[in-house]
Each structure stands twice: as structure tokens, then as C-alpha cells.
Image: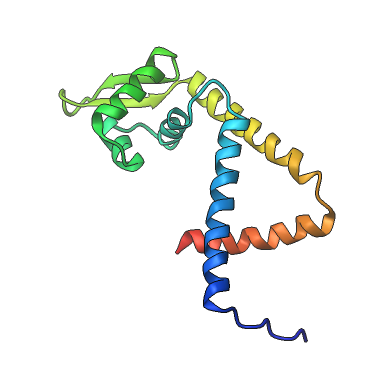
Length: 147
């Protein structure tokens, strides 16, 4: 049985907190921008919110935690590009319903493929032991994100 890990000091915990936050942010930013298509990150995020089904612009804005005018600009750009379709709400004429087009679904698949490829290329540079360590760390990070 392995020896228990030594207890971390407050300074070590603070350092871990800061370092972990920063590296997660850097990886997230790199994945979004290094592998990006011609979709801006906020546009891709709005598209993904429609993946499970149609929503109103207000619902997408609330999920994304942005203002309605900001979401309107994003949606307008996505509609102009043919990635999102607008339709009148059949139960409320004042509302608009947004849905993904075939091209919008393709854009989501392509963006994910490129992001996965960007990261896969970097993972290939690691040893088997390092990849196994990252697999264990991924499970821990998922636990942190779920709390």
C-alpha cells in the first residue's frame, strides 16, 4: 500500500489553486483559438445551445449569460451565414424560435473535429505514462467541474 500523500501547506494549496486555474484557462483559450474555424467562440457557443432543439433568443442569452442585444447581434450573424434559422413561434406571435440548419450542424461537427485534432496532436507528443496521468487527472477535473 502506498504511503499517504503529505499534507499541503496553505501556501502550496493557494499556489495549486492559482496554477490549475491558469493552465485550464490557457488550454481552453488555445483550443478555442488555435483550432478555430471562421466561427468566433461566442458564435460557436450559441450554436451549441441549439443542438438539443429549438430555443428562443432570450433562452440562449440566459444560458450564455449575455444581454439580449448582444445575443441578437450573435444570432443575426449566424442567420446571415445560414447556420441558424428563425421561425415565428406558433403559440406566441411576439416570439421567434431559433433552430440549427444543416449547415449549422456541420459547423459544430467541423469545429469539434478541429479542436479535438489540435489537442490530439499535442497528446501524441506525450509518453504513455503521461497520457495515463492525464486520464486520471481528467476524471478529477470532471469531479471538480460537477460540484
